[in-house]
Length: 415
Image (cartoon, rainbow, N blue to C red; front, top):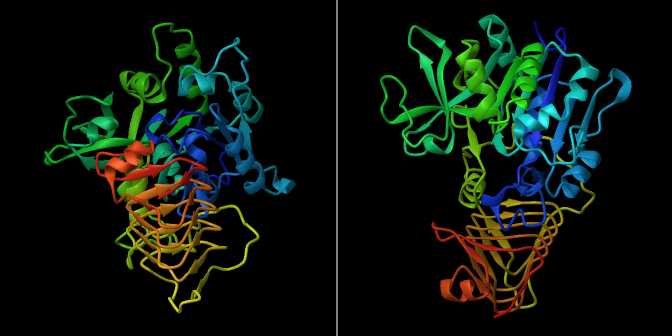
């Protein structure tokens, strides 16, 4: 039953605080964090749902949601002709004066959206992953399985598996989940491969009635943490009605062997940075330029990027980088970096292995190495970032274990 026939409803869970992405989430929700120059993290989830044929989608928001709500209202407008919409639903306090206590509670407090739409199936996804996925293919697999719930799964190194919900399959029935453990300290490897574990992508499909029943029963359980991965999915597993969908079987039009089955959880600063580095090689690990399965974003009215000589004849140039609209590089050099809209790079400055968000201004004779600069950061003439660790710590910048330097929004960086 394709989505064009079944009534399928999409719910995007976008209410997390994003503490591990600080300071990028100091002033915005995690799904609203800019990515790859012109996008927000939530654009990947919404693009996948839209490309899969969903036309009725709600985004459940909570913390610091202003920029996220604004982005959704400005970018994700759908024609009302066929009743399509993407709508933000803030914490409504329908069940008392309280915030969401978990992702399952977010759905419980937004149950009116399900009641209004009366879908046959509900697709529930996270809002902070970078990937391409056809949910229509997962829906077909879900229907054929006869299960009430299906979890999209991907293989990850066993050393990283404890960061995710780990799936154990029934060896007699490989499409059925026998155990689901959220962030276990001792993840069980895939049978026959001790180096990998099967983990949840945070994407689910449910029979609507079964989801509603499970959410309501969980809401009545005072000992529950009201979490989709921690409580709802294990309840379906215990009932023997939860299946697994192997992401490696998902075929995306225009995908290459190199970026097939790409999925990146960008929940930490280092993973956010590494996902950017996946984009910039000649043969990118994740290809933004696949027009057969586009990633939609806000259409901004800005002039093209420009690379010009300075007054001394130094040529502005860039290598192995992504450069957005409105960028001007005057006599500086940019290598292996991502420049977001309206970034300026001045004479004799060198920017390498870095991510510069919107409207960052880099003066003359500056050096920026392996750094993330949030919006509206101004780097004064002669200043450096990522060169002197002690100096960066004195300034209050965040430095990760991998040596990545992060500068908060709107900071003036002096020599």
